[in-house]
Length: 286
Image (cartoon, rainbow, N blue to C red; front, side, top):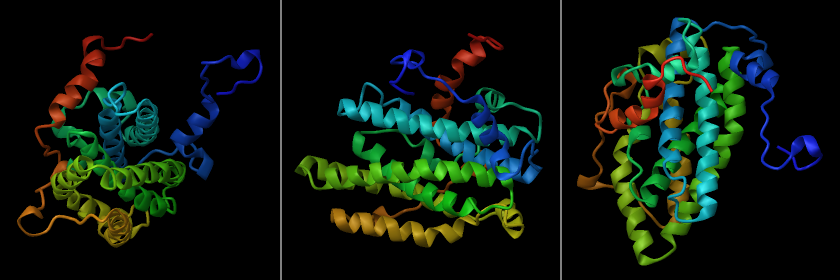
């Protein structure tokens, strides 16, 4: 967007189709026209589902955020994540001939591969910010490593996405500090949000046979290796905010299972809302 010249009138948005196509195919990293292997497609599907589900959650805050500026900020973060999801789902679909829209709108709940953290409800603003802190710190560590993948398409997507999730992490961090250091009520809500959210973090770092195979070829990142740098960042943020992670009886770990298609009760309604228009008018365009 630009404010210069008649062809860039206020409010006009244009998409550079060449650059978008390069991002989708990995052409920028030498992977033009690359078709994903079955394993790489499943891995890309996991990451794409994480991004799309989180984007859908954040989009629900538009016109509901505590400040007008946050309507814009959370909307922009959601748009970034939709961009990540489009690239990843497009690549995942090359293995089976399905489009990104096919994967977004025509899979039922058991076919989704996102981790449980991303489908947790928005709750109050403190819950959303806590979920966003965990998600963005994880994604920064993941994409920083995945940018060196031997898979040219995954490397290109990760390199571009890293620049955006770095901002998402900073945004969440600033809000954690603001809420923790605000009123007694905002601090109470932050403490409650951390207690409620943290059981869903552990699943992000589970290794399985798929990532072990891909990591052996330097295609993917072994999730367990991200835990130490993730914890270091989280510990620093919480220390500055004078907050602590749950301990004792409140420190339980959720079972997880999203990577295998087992989800909480929250994903179904979210997908129903996201998919209703496409399913009501299959093949429609406008």
